[in-house]
Length: 205
Length: 391
Image 1 (cartoon, each protein chain N blue to C red):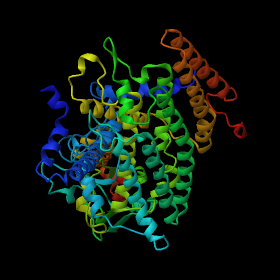
Image 2: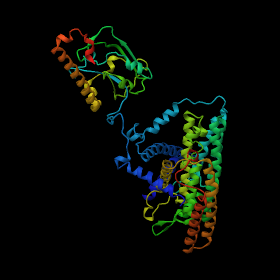
Image 3: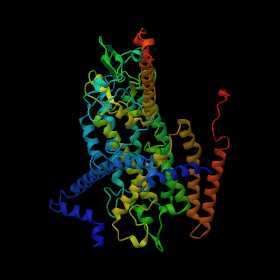
Image 4: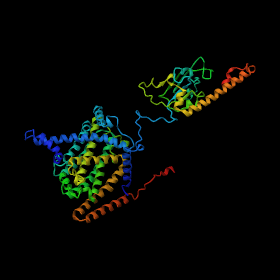
């Protein structure tokens, strides 16, 4: 009959109106600054650089433990070109004790970054991961949004905190690689005469 | 005590005026009433804006404004300060005097309507013999201001909005008048106080409001539809339709002039709800005979706010009509039904006091409603829309 649909609609809105005072599912608002929802595990905002730390409470050794070896793959793959890396001249030992290059500068312009996660996917060293931090508003739109090495460096523990499943997988993979390297080194030590002449570079693969 | 509470504003007014010399008293009484109207209704407007936003929020499963003051009730103050301090922009190609006058004319014309509304026993500014006529004359002149605003802005959106507004308001003005004529036919008076008095009787505990008769209910529904369209409220908010026309006729208005338009829209809503209350809902009379001790002005304003709540409820429910749907609805459904209602009212008047008139009048109206609905929807195919080009 004429007007039936209007009455049905009015009943639905009335249910919403009255229900919002009683039922939680009729009032889904979360009042953001005061209360907030924990981000989903797969949430991603902008990339950060992972470093391994002996002492998780101490953030001073971010530079020593940084996994990045300044290979610049992410810089080349980044679609909006928001990453800027300067490679070091010298080498420093990485987490496996092997001498590696390191970034003397690693900047990400988060005003340009489009959160595509391609840098994370191409990184062979598990050094760059996606953060869930989104409250990056600043009053300096150029300098404030250009994050440098120190601002980007977050510990592996922090990574475990925000993406536990993914971080566990990464750790397992890294441990496997380390075991492989150790086994090779042991084999080398067992047969010193044979490997004497072979240069050391091949050991890391 | 009960009589005092009922007449408290009238007595207060007379007490204030008694300090003046006798020659000035008539003028002072009118001035005081005007000041009261000019203060009360904008206050009600401020309250309604925040209640509307909160109500709409609840309807849409969210909280609505709650940051300014406790539960956000100070929001209208913040909005008022904002609109007062905003820059007042007049487009360089606009017709400046008309552009300035439009919001002023709107608010003045809308305020005039309140002059004849009885807001309580003995609480009417001017008890005119042709109060209803005066009200409609003032209501019709708001169309002028809307068109002034649209035309003087020299903006396509404004002009389109104004043209829509005038087409819509003139179409529904007819319905508004004709649905009120039914009340005049029964009460035999154009005076709004007499119309309220005519409804101020009780059978047992139930009042003789006109809405409780078949023609009164039909007339009230038609009146409510026309009133919604007259005040440009959703679902008839085509003149400002922000998704199509930016803001319609007040696109080029900013700052306090825009606030005046906003005020005018809400005041029109109040005045037209007040008239609907007076005509069909018994004005300031109590809904049950055992509640007559409650002051009459409380009943008037409760009924007014109830109507406003229904306006807000409809706004939260219904999507906007298309222009052709709006016109078809006015001329093909509402107007014929209102004309039929006039005849039914005449029948009611001359069938005497028996029970037959209840059955006759109800049967005619229900049959007409069902029939018109069937005929109107005969060619309409409801359900999911299929796009043939995509197959």
